[in-house]
Image (cartoon, rainbow, N blue to C red; front, side, top):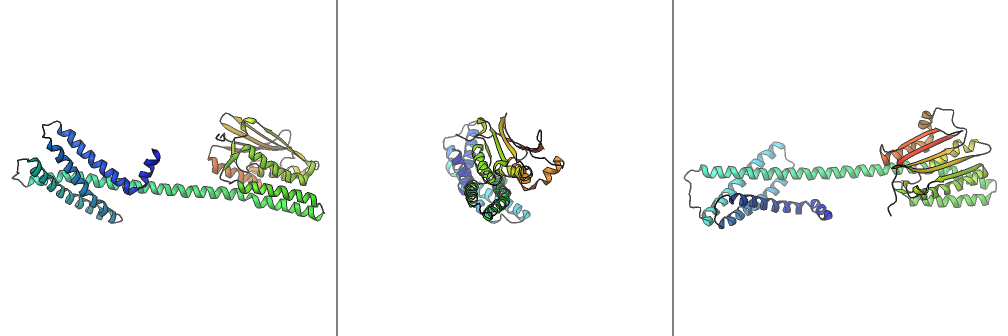
Length: 358
């Protein structure tokens, strides 16, 4: 039913004829109900129907006239509408009077010409109302069309922004990984280089298969994260330790694809890589009321800079992740950087809890 109504609204030509038929049928019905208060012959129903049918036919040319002058100046529009409404009303009054005299046998011929003028004026208001409704509905349809175009343009710009933010990370990640593979080849660690290239291929395949404007289950996001960490473990070996604490309840919660990878990369670059004995990264996820809480923490040396400066100057990873969250969730999210206890840094993310539909 909703789909039928939507298709009707989108087809302007069909919508006009439906409104035209409904409007003049309503006109005849209202006059018939009014006639019940007086004693009228049965033939009066035919008079009402003929009057409504005459109005239906006379207003059809008005539609094509108004379409031709649609882009005219306001003053010209007003003059044409007034003139066309009056001429149509006069024609309708003549037809109406003829049906009364010839069919209903009204039995009265008015001596004063003002009788016809008054009848024309009464019908002029009806024609003017029809014209006003036509222009009002037409303008409303145009406004709705412009609104749809604006929403489409906004949506396309929004998608382009999300893609740009996500794909900005790939060159940075690729540079680091390919540089590490090149180093392994130079030192003749061909087996490690081959393993690293294989993991990179799987990770890039995942990246290509998941659009940045779409959300994926947290479980799949963790799988992608582990692919990335497998690549990094080739570089760091036992120096990189990873702990996952993901509640079963949130494994099917929806999150932006590859949201965690830049955060982990940030921890490796500024924490693990600077520690001689390596370090640990801890990823936690749990549900709190209607929100999904995710944290990425490390036990690195932390930062000598104030936290608020780190948020502004924390590299591409932090900035892009925050901007992606803002683009996807508006104000309904939080993204904070805090000190981890006893040492290190911790990124905390809060987003609406959205479940994968079964």
